[in-house]
Every structure is written in C-alpha cells, then in structure tokens.
Length: 551
Image 1: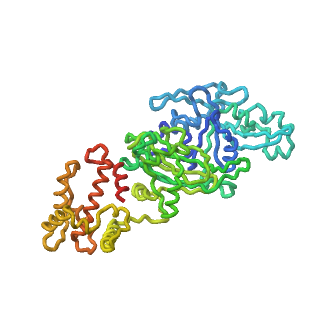
Image 2: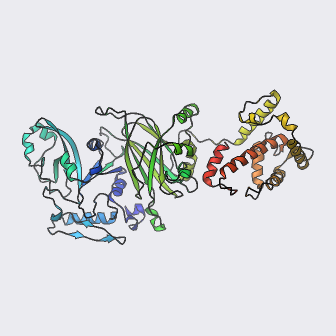
Image 3: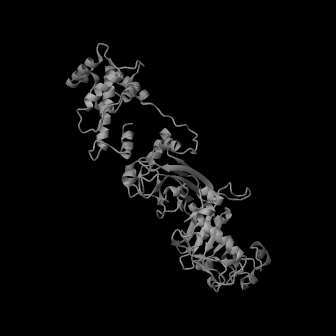
C-alpha cells in the first residue's frame, strides 16, 4: 500500500475511507446520521442488495471519528488495528495521544471499558452492518439492522438483542430467516429506530460489478471518466468565477431509466457521483497538497439537444449558459479531500457534470465516476476529447474518431461560392450578404488602392509567395498601434498561402489574397472584441471564445 502511494510518508493524513476504496475499487458515501436523508433505510437496504460494505460508529465526543478522521494516518491506523487485536484482552483503560505531522491524533484502543455504554455499545468504535430486514412483531412492521462488533464480543443488550424477549414472539421460520443465534459472537440485531438514536456516522462503500460475485442479483451501472484540469485552458475554478467556470471539463450524463420503486410515485433516477483527484498523495514530496474540489450538475437545454439530434455533436456549454441557468444539483461543499461523493435523485433527462477545483488555474488529474441504479450513459463533450486524449496517456478510446478539418476546404468552398455569386448576382451565404458585391468592390477607392499595392509587390504575374505576403501584411499591421505584435512569421504566411492556394502553385492571386484579407479583418474585429482591457493581448480563456467565434 505505501508503494502504491510512493512512500510511508505519503500516507500521513489519510483516512479509512481512502483505504477502503483503494482495496476494493468502490466509491464510499458518508452520512452524519442526524442529517441523513429520509430514505436512509431504503439506501441501506439497496446497499445490502448490491453487496456494498457498510460500517457505522458512535462519536466519543473526544474529537475522534473512526471512519473518516482526517487527523489520523492510514499507516498508523493499520498498525493500531493490529496492536488492538493482539491486546484484545486488555483490561486497563488506555487512551493513546500520539500525534502525527505535529498535530494531535487521538487513537482509542478498542478494549476500553470506559468507552462502553450501559446498552452494550462502544463509542469511537466501528461496527459492520451485515443485514437490513423487515419483520412483523405483534401485527406491526418492524425494521431491523444487524451489526457486528469486530472484537467478536461485547454486544447490544437492548430490544432485539440476542437474549431479548422480543424473540419469544417470533416463530421458528422467522428466526431461521433472520439467522437469530443466542451466541456471544459479536453479531446482533437492533431496531432501526434504536440504530438511528444511538449511532452517529454511517459509511457505505459501493462496489463495482467486477468486484462482486457473479450470482449477485443487483449491481450498479458504472461509468468511469478520466480527465485533467489544465492551467489557462480547462482549470476554471468553481461557480464563483463565472469568467472561467465554463472552461472546466464537461461530462454529459444521460439518465435513461427510472428507478424500480413501487412506493415512489415520482419518476426519478438515483445515481451517485464521485470525483477523485489523482496522484496528489504521491506528489506530496514535491510540495503538492490536496486541492479543494467539488462539482455541479446542469440540465442540458432543449436547443442543444435539438442541435445534437440534427448534427450529432455535443457542444461545450458556453459562458452565457451558466450566467443565466442554475444548477440542478451539486456537491454539498468543496472540500480538500482526495474524493468527494454525493447521491442524487433527478428525473430522466440529459445533464452535464462539471468537476472543478475551488480556485481557478490549479492543474491536476482526476477521475469522475457515476454509479447509477439503472442504465445511464456518461461521456466527455466531443470538442474536448482531443484535449483529454492529449493530456492522458490512459484515456478512453472513443467509438467515433476525432476528425480535424483544415480551413482550406472551407475557404475553397467560400471562394467558389463568391465567384458564383458574382456571376449570378446573388449570394446564399448569410454573412456575405452584408458585404458589397464583387463588382461594387472593384469600383471602390479602397479596392483600387489595394490592387495597385498588390501589383507593385506581385509584378506582372499578379501572384505573391510567402515572403511577399509577409511584407504586405507586416506593412499593414504597423499602422495598427493598438495591436501588440512583432509581425507575421514566414511560416505563418506559408500556412495562410496553403489555406488559400486553390491550384497548389505555392502562390496566391489577387482574388485569393482579397479573400484572405477579408478573413484577417474579420479575425481582427473578433480579437478586439475579446480584448476587453484594451491591452492588445488576450488570455487563453478569451482565446477559446475568439476561436469559436472565428469558426
């Protein structure tokens, strides 16, 4: 386990939730029982049906939390567990105040009679939840929870304990079904009401289908997506940063089938979202700490779904969408833990999940997992797949390949369209309707000056190469003092000629150059639009919008 994280030092500050997930590959839910949802019994019942691991504990009110204490480290915890097993017959109360990382950590040795309550339960101790059942007692339905004390002794002595009188009213068949035994083996039944009254914390580790045995009746449907926050590109921070939040990776989640719950009249899909940041513990020796992370879930607008049905492309939702639309669900808080998970219930629809750090510009890798009770689909938005593929060597292979189309084909079509429009006297391109016709431009003063300059540089053949194009463009750009640029590089001019050169001669004629110049002027307007501070530069986030507007 230390080798997995790089060193024993890297295990400091960990918790049992991380260990449970690393050993099983599952996703852990954590509940404060006093704040648990109303359907917590149903959640526990479904967890048992799906083979999930469950543990519950009682606060000792000394700042100790067995299941998820951030102040104890995994290495120490495992060592203490071994020591506690060796000292299981210890008769003297012991409290160990050992500290780690210059911070006090309270570790309670289990066999302490002072932590045992009069009802037989032990504070600061983790109990395994092994069954959740309903039975009939004196004509009424009673909910029961079966717990196991890992010591193998010291049991609950209240109602429904091994020797309680409630069992005298049960027939033998029901006793056999509930596996009731009057044995001091550490396992006992307790009513659900007493469980909620005495216990304070509940952890559920949901296992993936490949972890469970083949004969399990029910399993989760699991979707796993790997991603990365890249500074200046996809590390936009939380919703408090509206200018960059929309640049975070976006994952589409399509909830297809509602839950099979006859008692629930709502058409609802239950699912669990877990966001885990990767390698932060391993990189601790390099000064890396856990980021504060969380996520938000938005419903995809109907217009976007319509465009997807028409064109088959799932677009990255833009800044304006998040300015005017509230999230349908989100993590309760942003927290600096390795993983944050949350259970949700939403109607069938298509949603987008946005994982993020709290602060923008923080680089890191993450895994986003979705556990759903019924069938669902989860994938990265199409225009982000290239970035994900580039950043992650283990990224998923997509069924549909990503195709990059050069602007050359588009520009050639536009040139052909312009020529046809000049001949026919009409233009089918909406943007081109705003421009003057080819005949009108030929007679304009600007067109005459432009043609004269082009003729002087090009010579008799009326074609220019890359070096001549650079001279023309640099002379024009010098007149724009509001743009911070050192001019066009030769390689850039070669690329522009390649885009506009329809006959493959390595040169462009006047019509091709005029078309290129129209594009450059259009790009210049877009650049100025996003240069909001008039600095003559735009940052990477502004560049993303500018490129989208440029097509």
